[in-house]
Length: 251
Ligand SMILES: [Fe+2]
Ligand SMILES: [Fe+2]
Image (cartoon, rainbow, N blue to C red; front, side):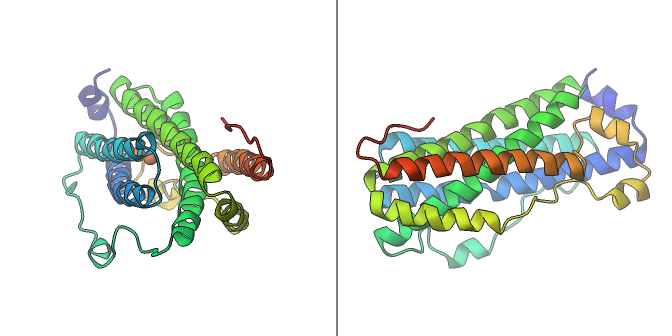
């Protein structure tokens, strides 16, 4: 069914929840662009190869496109306020705030483990699960594209970590040990539409899922547990192999 016909068949409450969800998704995607811009700057500062730098720029452009696709869906569901918002905090900060190689390596390790390995990986898992339940072809295609590209952003993070391990073994080891401790303080994000909002707006939970709507908190939590365990295992393996003279690539 084309998206316009599928939207027309929904109650106004269900449509309203989906319009808000896509608008928030668009804002989140838009806000994820500067992290890659910043990372390309940091990577060049520590001598990373062109393949990683170009991966960063590609990821930034993909996030721009994710935002545009989410905002377009928000409008298809009736949202009118899909303008991007200013991010004044960017005006006060330089692309890299760390003055030394050691501090930059530490920041890259932490950000690529937490924001890349965990959050981009989880985002791919969650969006992939939303796509699997989605019955509106145009919406499912957007979700599948986003899931595939978020997965590649997580893979970029693991490639950055693998390069840092080879280039800065001493700094890498202490930074990854510290970053693994940070993981223990994290808890599953609340990406689900608040149930009070769904109820208050009279949305139909079944229709929300058919339209690629959010997972419930328990589903997100389950994906989170699996993603955290996989991340810990992969990071621990990198740490173990960091001490070996012929450490190979970790997939
Ligand atoms: Fe994205
Ligand atoms: Fe991403």
